Image (spheres, rainbow, N blue to C red):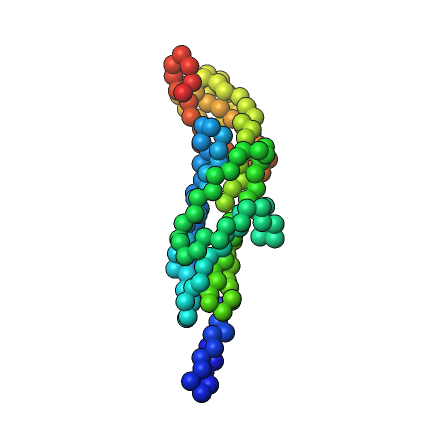
Length: 163
């Protein structure tokens, strides 16, 4: 901020706050992304926020001027096998200075994991798996599709069909 003869000029860009996302896929094939932010400030007054969703901060495929809200919801069709997206938020003040922050939010694949082996034999019959004792269900060598960050959890059950 520069002041002279009673005139104040704002030369500072807005201060960054926090930026978070949450996402899920509907049964109808729509990918939902929720973007939340807060704590952004300016010495003068914030004018508006702009959101960009794209493959990188340099490639914006979906743009939204969201005013002075603090949340936004994207509904995107599932058109690619693997989607790589990040959300960038820009905070603009009244003199057209801005600050931006980007968050990588999605690495999603529409392909299932590649199956490995599954066995319910006692661990003593499988010497290549050290440290397992007793009987139960054991599995291994399952592989996640490239670019997905791995398998988050496994689910198994006993019954006539999988859940």
